[in-house]
Image (cartoon, rainbow, N blue to C red; front, side):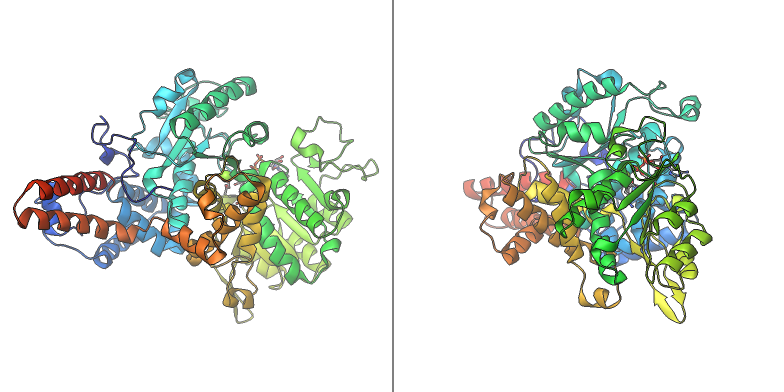
Amino acid sequence: MSSSQPQANVKQSSHPLSTRHITTTGGDFDTAYPVEVKKYLRTYGLTPPAVESYETQAKRCLKLLELKPTAIGKFQYLTHLRATNVHLFYRLLSENIKELTPLIYTPTVGEACQKWSEIYTQPEGMYLSFSDKGNLYSILSNWPHNVEITVITDGSRILGLGDLGINGMGIPVGKLALYTACAGIRPDATLPLTLDLGTSNKALIEDPLYMGSRRDKVTPEEEKEFLDELMAALTERWPGIVIQFEDFKNPFPSLERYKDTYTCFNDDIQGTGAVILAGFIKAVKLSGVPVKDHRAVFLGAGSAGVGVAKQLVEFFVKEGLTEDEARRKFWLVDSRGLVTNDRGDKLADHKVYFSRDDNNGKQIQSLPRLIDFVKPTILMGLSTIGGAFTPDIIKQMATLNDRPVIFPLSNPSSKSECTFEEAVKYTDGKALFASGSPFPDVEHNGVNLTPGQGNNMYVFPGIGLGAILCKSVSVTQEMIYASAVALSTALNEEEQKRDWLYPDIRRIREVSVTVTRGVIRAAQKDGVDRELNIRSLSDEELDAYIRDRMYDPSAEKGKLQDEISQLTQHLNGNGLNGVANGVANGVKSAVAGAAAHL
Ligand SMILES: NC(=O)C1=CN([C@@H]2O[C@H](COP(=O)(O)OP(=O)(O)OC[C@H]3O[C@@H](n4cnc5c(N)ncnc54)[C@H](O)[C@@H]3O)[C@@H](O)[C@H]2O)C=CC1
Ligand SMILES: CC(=O)C(=O)O
Ligand SMILES: [Mg+2]
């Protein structure tokens, strides 16, 4: 975690690319700066004369947002705000997280990725092409900041929208914005990274506006060689960097290959597994069904489906079941039906663990028939098929269970297997519900019901911050599991009273502190931490340590103003004698550095 000082090992002022042009750092023209700051930054006269409060600025921003008639228009406005005033953007986002997250993340980011080639205006991260192989380290050197965390995608499975090639850049940008808003990782310490390794999306290749390589997807072997070079280059360029893999079509091989060697994790497999485990722990309690009697049908057996199921197996085992008993609680369905040993096709490696051998030769393709056969207590959707949980299927779950666990987790909203309204309506308000994308509250029998949002955004910020702060050499399975347990303990009294599965998203910064602490403690237990000074801290002290290191956008301008005031006092004080001159120069360079961060 960086301090608020400019990074020492990156010469920002001499870098040919002005930091102002990178959207993690823009902000010299802030209308909140007092006259002395504007003069110092030489922006005096370039902005309107008023010196505005944050409240006035926020009012204008929210009004401008309201004036944009479409979600994509709002997304574009927020992108512009981040590019031109990064601290204002993050303060606005942090203080309006519930309202603004859907505009910079799911569902709107899905539409933004689909339209990326049309709406592109400025750099927001790095693009590395297959033809850059052999030169990745030197290209990474073009990024002018000291990076602590990167989110990487190759765009090959963006949400439930398929292969969007480099148009997937919206995802690393959006996820990293949440790292900053939810866990206080400094914006300039984040690097959105998109790999241009070709695309299977023919329409994109033919689109004249598409900005990626117009070639077929590279082979898995070529991808492996590219990633080998990239992982080494990233870690050499920024030792200690945390690397998050996101929205790769088949991410299992690279997770297996790099998880013990680099500080990395896969959000779709592991982050999703953790967030769903946290909600599941609560749901199991609320269902009234003993842990050992649960049975789960999963529609979708991809990275997220298998990642979630594996995490839940670990939970069942910790609850006293054998691994085999736990594994047999899962019936996974893919596009060809129930995953079985004798289905006749070659199963992908990641499905084999859950493949059934007790189907007596029957291959079940229809979800209602499988539900009849299994009588599940839990129905999970990670299939990318919007509306797959039909009213009849939801009613079937309600007939089988007093409180059915129904989690339609596919993103964006259009791909959700059902809506909250449908789940409430067809279970008479009894469903224990969480969805990947947000849904509005529903009124049922005079009671206001709030849906849970089972989205990995509840855990990945804390996993990343935890790994950064304890300088973890890898991200262990225990760290992932700990993030889930920590999240499940983070609900306050009111949230528990209302039977919520997840904490109110408006408390996400506080929740992220708890998750971060859990992750650090697990790293310490596993002995993968290198920040030994924090080992002896009590939980309260560790929480305070974490909070202290979280970027607070509302404090940034104050810090700059203080430094400029000090400088002004020195300049206006006793004359520029040798000592004062030296101090002033020191402050001035700090200010110049800080200004470059704005
Ligand atoms: N809520 C959250 O935090 C997260 C949600 N997701 C969402 O989960 C979905 C799946 O993601 P991944 O597993 O990574 O994708 P994937 O492409 O690896 O897996 C999709 C799975 O759905 C199956 N499927 C496709 N059509 C089907 C059909 N008609 N019937 C039954 N199964 C079908 C496929 O065979 C495959 O097993 C996406 O929509 C993604 O946005 C992913 C990660 C996190
Ligand atoms: C939330 C997320 O990571 C996904 O839908 O892929
Ligand atoms: Mg994802």
